[in-house]
Image (cartoon, rainbow, N blue to C red; front, side, top):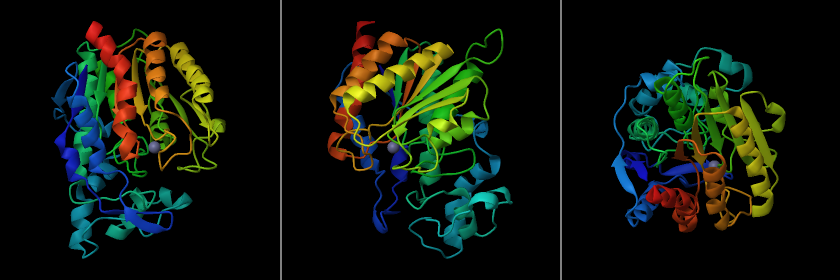
Amino acid sequence: MIVVHSPHHLLHNPPKEFISNHLEAYGESPERAEIILEALMDHPEVELTRAEQFDLVHFHKVHGADYLIYLQTAFDEWVTAGLWSEGIMPEFFALGHLRNRPPAKSPEGKAGYYMTDSCTMIVKGTWEAVKYSGFTALTGAKCLLNGKSVVYSICRPPGHHAGFDYAGGYCFVNNAALAAKYLQDQGRPEADGDLKVGILDIDFHHGNGTQDIIHKLKNMLLVSIHGDPDYSYPYLTGFESENTDKNVNFALPPGINDEAYFETFQKAVNILNAFGCCYLVISLGVDTFEHDQLGNFKLTSAIYRKLAQYLINELPIPTLILMEGGYNIDFLAGNVMAFLKPYIQKEAIN
Ligand SMILES: [Zn+2]
């Protein structure tokens, strides 16, 4: 099984985030990707490969041009203006109708325009890391187009909270939308139009950014299982009332266990099957785990293997697995490996 990674993620190492009304160490740490990579190195069946470079034209298909320029120039502008040299954390937010105005001109104004929360920070190396996180997803997609049946891309920073023109929830570029659009554009076109790509988001948090972007794209379906936004980030999106022919949300209550989650998971896979997609992109978050500090589900490590096995049996199409969340460092690699093992074993047999 091919696993794509990039050392560039180490360049994104924000010192702090503002969460629960105080500053604390940034939860989306470089250690996350490193311990997953280390765990994978122990498996001889895994072929580790570095992310290739791609033209940024692919990023422009899922993000606004002004937003991408902001990500590339924000830190230098911020520091040149004499602001906090450790990183960019917004001090105001462009709410409601303010989003429909032209972007602000000052570094502080731009931060509040393009960033949606104070738990996401831009530092000096953020753009390089974000760009290579996107390249990691695109390299995985390219491997599928070259005939691989499954690829895991250790994307860091994660991507599913990044919308068309905003960053949030530790995310800057939406790796799932980027890869899905690339698969659609570069894959074999269907006679009746764009190739169908399904996205299954199983991070604990609603993939609000993916939902935002997918509504601008054709022939894609996002199915997301996540914590009820009445209790969990991103708080205002992810409700089942938002369901359309492009996205299906399953918002689950706090404390849900393996059995109840699996029932919902089966429904989600059935919906993707009925959609008839040629490729599947999975936004994999293991912050659904019972001891994750950012989630409120009660899933055990055993469920991850069961989910992957179900997908292998019921939706046997080329599958790209992208890393999203998972913040309990003691269990993160173990839970990711539990999900990957059925795929690794299947690939080893083939
Ligand atoms: Zn999450």
